[in-house]
Length: 273
Image 1 (tube, rainbow, N blue to C red):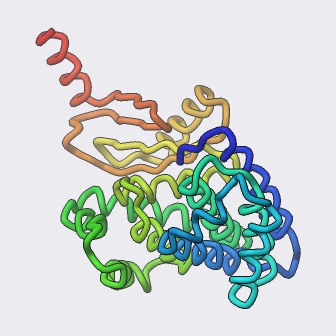
Image 2 (image 1 turned 120 degrees about the vertical axis):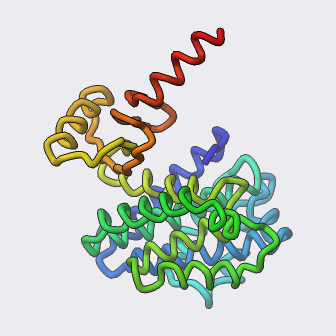
């Protein structure tokens, strides 16, 4: 998610309000997350409303009153409080307001998983689903098809994973599929993996290995990466025997290619140059 300076400041303020709301012992983070994402769907459909709540030239209190009047009977008090914090701030443009609200919804859902002691499971389920999409281009295409009805996509997701993953994982995946924003579904799901890891201050290392890594090898690789990035690192590993030997590691936008295939490709580029 790319935000301009004003939107980053607005998201920071709204994120603090979300943390305050979820800190209340009576708040249900997962329910708040789903409610916020339902507002994302509403704003995506209703262009006029989206422009009205993101109009930085209007009175912030008027924008808050607008959403309160429209949604008071449809949202819980905690969710409405977060939404009022969102629309009361100045965003760079309507799209970034909706992106920010989506981010808050995702964060609340992951907070719900954390509260239930399921955050690591949800993170792993998201990772595994992204790898399935990468291995099945026809499935990625079907879920990325902007002309396909939303209910058809939702039905396909539920057919694939409904009883196999945590309900929070399913909701997160559905939201990425239904609002792709021009990205691949696999990429969108991987962003959620990183958001989940970030809740514990961890970076995510996507490791592709030519062979299964032993527990000792995983621990050694994790230790090396933690020294490089100076923070805890979670490894998500897939096996690809076409690498020949070694591993390829991606952390954020950085790629460390220690595979035989990668070294051969580098040699080909040198010879061609």
